[in-house]
Length: 344
Image (cartoon, rainbow, N blue to C red; front, top):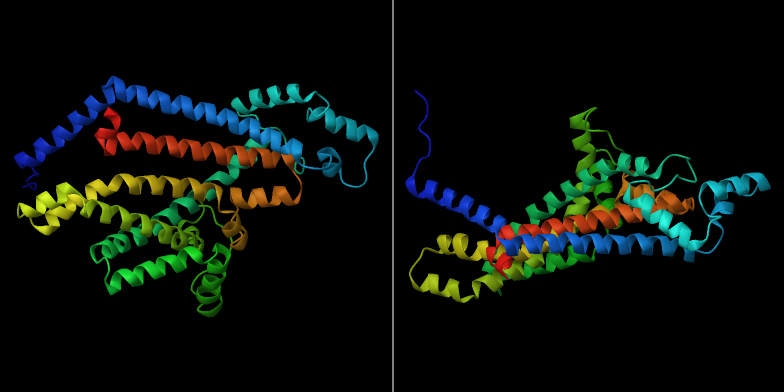
């Protein structure tokens, strides 16, 4: 005999109500206008990022063609590379060409390797995305329980300990945290490898072993930042009128916390989680260099060292686009988490 399914009338009605509410909200003209406005805003900012990225490369001192060719080159080679890279054209023509190519996914050719920049970036993106996601998960596993525990014991010793610990976590640089973890878990105990990367498709176990130390490094710093936001959001929700009303009605404290406090603290936490994810995707340069992790950050570091301007432009542009995309997803998630935002 098969196990009976959970068909409690209240649970079924609640699930149906949530689905109906989401459908109505998605079809609401105001919600559609907000989403369209978010997409248009993202497109305009992305165009600005492309223009600023192009302009910053013009301000860099030195001739990129001479830097790319090194100390010995012929005039023919110089003119050929200058023509191939479009640097012989007027600045406005270069800008319009760069915008058009960027919008179609063509970010030029690397001076150092001669390979398409788009291909190089997409090749490194999975490594950075996996590290950023793993670091964010570690950070949330630290921040959510620590932030809630600290808020529920505001002013007590546990609250003070968590606040001091989170402040120390924010103050410690990424590279220093990474070196400490390598010294302890790799050099001293020999439990985990200190560096390197193995693709997930080749060996999942070894991929996970090599991911642990850099993910914990990223997660401890990120978790310390998010702990403070979770604590503040829960304290603000605890002080709200609806929580006092629910408490005065005699509702059990776990029910008040689950139904009124945590649910209303989700929106500000979603904000900081989105910001942290976007920051991690573009800010893992130091961690990837310390752990020899072949991601976007390390690629950008190598491009800067080699003065590979097309690759630098492409990396900055990709990181800016990822930041905007995540912000757009967070804005959409707002309307799902809190329908009041969609009605404003």
